[in-house]
Length: 306
Image 1 (cartoon, helix red, strand yellow):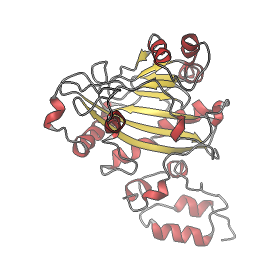
Image 2: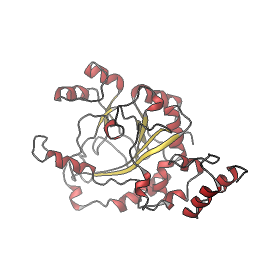
Image 3: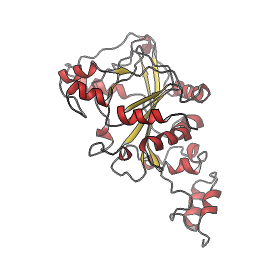
Image 4: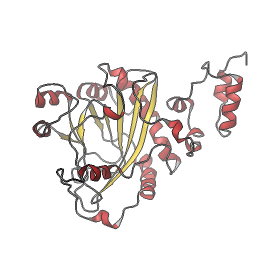
C-alpha cells in the first residue's frame, strides 16, 4: 500500500504541494465514477459554453456560491467503493508520512462535481484554513493538516485544472510568506508563478491549508470534473476540524462501519483495540449498535478482567 516516495514527502513539506499521477488504479476509480454519474447527472445546459460572472455585479457573491453545488459528505449515497476510498490504507500511510506521526484522523471527506456551463468556477488565490481552524496553520508540519484531492476524471487546463503557487514562489511573488492576497495587484503577481494540476483519472494532489491555490473555470463544451477532497490530521489535534461525523448519524454508516478494518475505524474516531474505553459494557453495546461489524479483535484485545 506504499504508493509514494520520500521525495513526494519532502516536496509536500517544502512546496506545500505534491502531485502523484497514478496513485489509484483504473479498477479502483471506475466504480466511483459510476456513482458520481448517478449522484450528479449532467443536465442539458451543462453542454453550454463556459459561464463568466462579473465580479462587480451586485449578485456576484450569491452567484459565486453556485460553485459549491454538487457537494456531499461522507457517508455517500453510493457503493461500498465510494464510501471506503477516503479510508484507503494507502491514503492513511501517505498522511502518516506527510505529517510525520503514527496516529492520524480523517476529518474531512466530500465529493465535488463540476460541469461546464453550470457556473463560473474561477477563483482568486486563497488558503483554506478559515473553515478548518479558528486560529491559523501551525509552524510544525505535524500539527498541520493534509488535504488530498482525488481525481476521478482526467483533468486538463480545459476542464478546471487547479492552479497553485508553491510556498517559495509565494515569497518571490509577494516578498513575504502569506496566507492571503488581498489586492488585485497581489493576485496578478501570484498568477505569474502559478502551476496547473493536470492529471489523469486516479491521480491525487496533496496540499495543506496554508497553501495558495485557486479554482479555475471549465472551458471544454460538455466538460466535467469529478473530484473528492479528503482531509487528515494528527490524532489529538483539536485545533483542526471540518466534518463532525456524528452529525450524520442518520446516514447509512453501515456501508463503512461494517467494511472497515480496526485501523480504518480508528481514523474515524473509534478507540483502537485495547484502549481503556473498551469495557465489557461498551463492547457489547457497540456490537449491538453495529451487529454486522466483526469486533473479534476488540474483544480479544480487551482486558482479561472483563
